[in-house]
Image 1 (cartoon, one colour):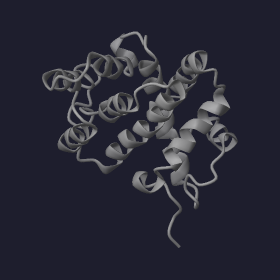
Image 2 (cartoon, helix red, strand yellow; image 1 turned 90 degrees about the horizontal axis):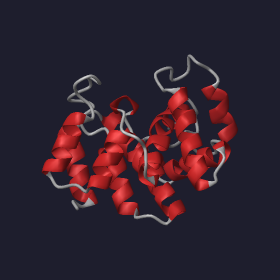
Image 3 (cartoon, rainbow, N blue to C red; image 1 turned 90 degrees about the vertical axis):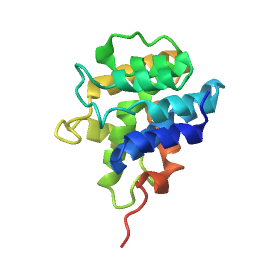
Image 4 (cartoon, helix red, strand yellow; image 1 turned 60 degrees about the vertical axis):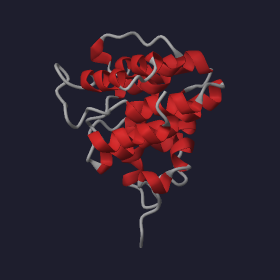
Length: 193
């Protein structure tokens, strides 16, 4: 199993976009929080989250690209099958069923981490003090972060909730809390001035 450091080097080699790198770090934080919740291996889960969008910048075409090239590269580098399966299963259009807790955590945190980041960007205090209520209010505004799939957020929360016992508000709290701990690294801390 490659180390977290090796996974991050791979991400940096394949991804130039700072915002996409930060997205992968945000999903890593959230998925690791779920690993703690379930008593699972934080490093393995974190690595799966870190590499889930590895090829998105290079191969954005969902018909022929992402995540197929990432999976090829991960197999070449001998990443565990559970990581590879989670990467495939996070892409709904691949038709790979989400079977494991890791699969469900990655899917359940991916779009939501992006949405929470968008919410933090428009708040002077960033993610600090963010509540599930404020996130849910933004979710109801279709024009806000319009590219984020509300359906995937709902499906992911429901699938994870069935396994974790957490309702939607608790799911939001867990993700917000995990991302808050890394706010500076994720660029979602309070705005200067």
